Image (cartoon, rainbow, N blue to C red; front, top):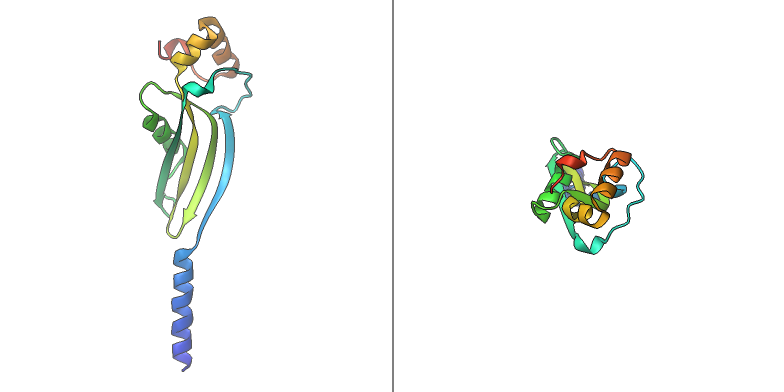
Length: 135
C-alpha cells in the first residue's frame, strides 16, 4: 500500500513538472541601443516581427540570435528593431529568448530624416556607421 502511494505521488509530481512553464519579460526597448534617442519617424512603414532562440536547458540560446531571427523574418531591407520587448521563456527542459519589435529600414529612416539628420543621429547614439547603412 505504501509503495502504491509513493508511485502515485511520483507520477503526479512528474506530470506536474512536465506541465509547468514560466515566461517573464526581460526588457522593453525603443531602439535596440543602450543610448536614449529622440528620434521621430513614421513607424507605420515598419512591420511587427518576432524571433526566437531556444535550447535544451537554455544551452545555446541567446538574445542576439533571437533579434537576428526577428529581423530576418521581416526581410533583407529591414535592419533596425524599435518598440520591442525581450522575454525569456522557460519550459521543462527547454529555455530561450523571444524578441518582438517593429522592424524598420535604415534606408527609409534616412530618407525621412535626411542624410545629414540620419548621420547625426547615428553618431550621437553610436548605433552604427551611417555611411555603411543601406543606401
